[in-house]
Image (cartoon, rainbow, N blue to C red; front, side):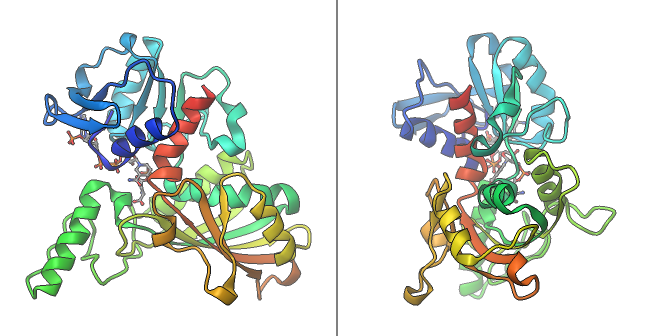
Length: 323
Ligand SMILES: NC(=O)C1=CN([C@@H]2O[C@H](COP(=O)(O)OP(=O)(O)OC[C@H]3O[C@@H](n4cnc5c(N)ncnc54)[C@H](OP(=O)(O)O)[C@@H]3O)[C@@H](O)[C@H]2O)C=CC1
Ligand SMILES: N[C@@H](CC(=O)OP(=O)(O)O)C(=O)O
């Protein structure tokens, strides 16, 4: 559902790339797209209208439309016996709905037919944070992000391209998707502002990390910033730990963690970057160093994860693999 979008298109790729056992693959989007075709590795598939899907014919539905659409359609699907893996934020904070990163909390799925996929920034940070938490105990976590325009979907990427071309051509730059022009800019504002002056994107990282880690009181905060890249969210992460931690031990632990590509060789200028993390399943982790504020109980590192993959499509397909 949402097969023409940034996440939907990527789900199609990931299903094929990971040889997901499919008897048939059906693609749905809005009425606007119904009847058009999408080229896939298993041939051209005609898009159907998502609003008229018959879920009794489907085993697993990946929802990649919007929270409102998911709210209106999830029950219809699960009542018909179809599993739903939902990429939107509609159900993430519902106690009855598991919020899952398969490397961390597959058990949370239980017998639920509806599974929520986390926010992209959250999923990417969770991969290195979880093992650090298990080994050293996270006392405090402070995150600052560098988020790509594709986080706002296909329209976000188009806006960056158009604005960049217009800017270089000396033409007027008009923004629609983002609150300000994003070309040659950074915008410390993703999603809506909340009563506590954080944005909803920032609070999602707090709410969702606590739920995935089953740590309802974890001290965690985040500043989310949009930058003019196409794909991959970068995150600078500072932690204070219960037990003493050294960069050497952390490198060993993170290097052995499923889902991480350790890129930490500063002598050769090797560290995580959007260009190297693009289209990669693993999250790149590097710049690991002792934090100057928290001393031997603190660490600082940089993470880059393809948010359309680990932050959405890949994580959703991994959940389906567990199902
Ligand atoms: N982009 C990202 O990095 C991430 C996105 N998500 C979430 O995934 C979901 C999809 O996001 P994304 O792919 O970025 O969005 P896009 O805007 O790129 O795609 C939206 C998709 O939804 C379809 N759609 C829109 N309106 C309707 C409607 N009324 N009925 C049926 N289909 C409709 C569109 O179809 P059509 O082409 O026909 O209009 C399109 O396929 C959102 O909930 C988002 O929050 C989650 C994590 C990361
Ligand atoms: N909000 C993210 C992408 C996204 O869609 O997240 P969510 O699924 O939590 O709305 C971004 O703009 O980078």
